[in-house]
Length: 284
View: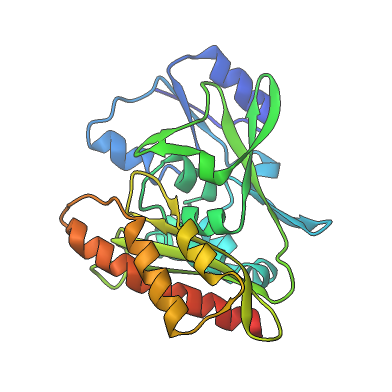
């Protein structure tokens, strides 16, 4: 197996084209454990962390650009980004241990396509778009359309994500992310929940986006809960509808972290809590 660390996007694309049995990585926090568990080793591994634009965070013209290879620890610790997207920053700060966070990235978390990926629901509720490079040029795609199932994505051969773009939030709008894990840290989510809520001065929700992780083959939008929120106060009646809608959206598996019934129950609880948290932030 060969290792290359290209210094530009074009160089990385040339390397991908030169060897059909190759793969890109940004932190290797997923691919190394997978190879140790029996996944076939590629002939060529291409490290993307030496490409400058892929390890930068910037905000220009009210649009944030987060490089796909930026370490999670820098996302979680960026005060300006955290001010605009506290939920996204929180989700990045929950990936693995401190050591893992120094390598793990948004690009890897999205492209590994785990149903339990922490940052994916947070990216979805913020309408994040992935900037994808290929020999044919650049294209953009909503993050919600990247994962197509556990371990599979809609990216074509020879493509990789360069960055994520997210518009700055509207006034009185905020996001939040919560998850439930069996241990206190360094575990995979039984359920993850993200919400972005916009409030008016009267205390009613004017817009909402809710997404759940680890309850279906991919992260799922809970559109029925969003509809229940819009135009209404976030009171007990609305929250009851949110919990019911979240549970109805679930199609989970049974595994050692939880049964289908347990995950479905927890999804309702987390959906309620994350909406309350996002709404509280939006009111400030």
